[in-house]
Length: 461
Ligand SMILES: *[C@@H]1O[C@H](CO)[C@@H](O)[C@H](O)[C@H]1NC(C)=O
Ligand SMILES: *[C@@H]1O[C@H](CO)[C@@H](O)[C@H](O)[C@H]1NC(C)=O
Ligand SMILES: *[C@@H]1O[C@H](CO)[C@@H](O)[C@H](O)[C@H]1NC(C)=O
Image 1 (cartoon, rainbow, N blue to C red):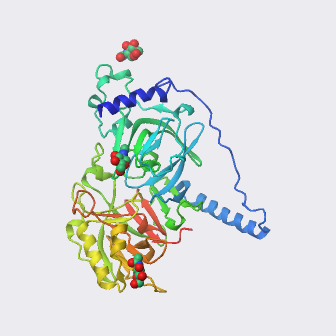
Image 2: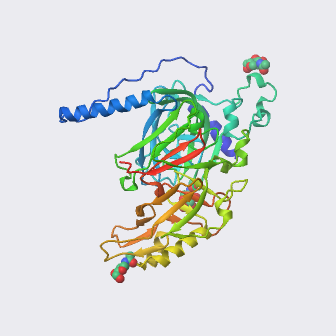
Image 3: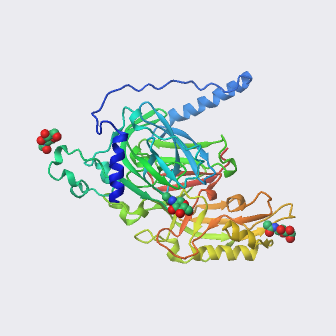
């Protein structure tokens, strides 16, 4: 960590000259575009229809008195297994793609021309765009005394956090110490900065961001939508956010769905046709000062899984999160396939093997790293047992087959269960992680004001 720190400090001079420059004033010009119907070949009726629906949306927007969307951002399915959004940062805006991740709480981006990414999934010839703080008049390095630095380091104590400030706390210029984040796979590190986040129709000043100088195994920056203080929803004071996950068959295509962010006064109105289940609080979340790794997750109460109508006998300890976050179920947009702790995965696999009539494709299992896989070559139509998840409060999630079985090769001969496990057995943390694959073509709503998670099956395109 020491050598990392020195590396970062020496790179700092490349980022900001001068460091901690005094604020400059500048105006922000947002080009005003009108939303004209895209095709000139549209008939007048189509145009009217378009404008009518536009107006209905607008009226709905104006008539919804309490909670309202502040921003509607396109959400793209990606072949790296996640979903991405683009955010406009700085003055003038630089547009940077991010992985939308409800399983973490920090927002960081590839930063400066020196950014390096090891073992990253994009081609070396086509690296993702990086943010250049020097080209933004509103970028500032985060000072150590800033309370946001306490969030980054999960350390509200200025004296232990900012050693150099111990003598002159009043005007100490020490910067917030560099961050290093290790994810399930890969890592990233850099310097905390603040800059404008420019959402359509709303500018958020002093938005905290990680300016990452190096990463490993990261396809893009990450926008953490989890529950910690540094997450995008918390920094914006959102009451709610929602999205619909397009099928992964549209990966890397121009097709997108919407991520909608809502602010406003609390409103307990439920969205029509949505099933809700409460978000579970871990004891640490109530202590606003410190956050454990797991308390940034959205825990929900899974009660039961059925396969072909038969109940899987899941031991209670996996269904309920303990005080430190071990066990229990979370929703994670950053996970591709659903994770089931070994014991639960084994039970689901046995139930499938018992009920599915197709031949096992063991060779495919060994190469795909998924099980069970079945050989369906020669069948015109295939049928798999229904899989259903039941949640606290009565919400039921019946999965479309495509959300838990997938072809694994182009010859379409074998399909595998798209739920994974850790063969090593129990480890700490959530026992069940609902990945984005399972929630394709589901509209989901994170109702933060009312601490509940809502969903309904819906075609997202
Ligand atoms: C990159 O991947 C190789 C092979 O898997 C591994 O040996 C190396 O440590 C990785 N480098 C980083 C920085 O993760
Ligand atoms: C604040 O900083 C200035 C310039 O570095 C220094 O001269 C002054 O003594 C400092 N004041 C305090 C209270 O530390
Ligand atoms: C599936 O079964 C067919 C017929 O038995 C066989 O020819 C084919 O190789 C099998 N495919 C896989 C992927 O196991």
